[in-house]
Length: 127
Image (cartoon, rainbow, N blue to C red; front, side, top):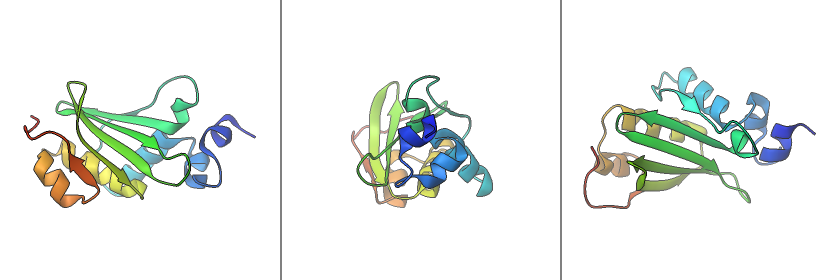
């Protein structure tokens, strides 16, 4: 069994295993759908290099992780290291759409309205 297969679990994430992990799969999904998510990075070592992704912009960072017992994607929108909004998406395309909207200037209110799975955690609006 490959490192990526062991880290992700073929049963829940066969598409991510095929693409080499969450970050490359997310970048490919965004490109295929014409979405601007910026540079997608992952930790360089350990299991998290397959199971985590970060999409950074001037406005903040979209951090993505994987559910362990069921297939879902956990998203945090962070500004200056603080989580401003959080949600769980069931489709990788939804993750790319959130990142594209955030990079495109959508406010936290707009993100919460456009993506019902995203919940704003702070009343104050992020940059």
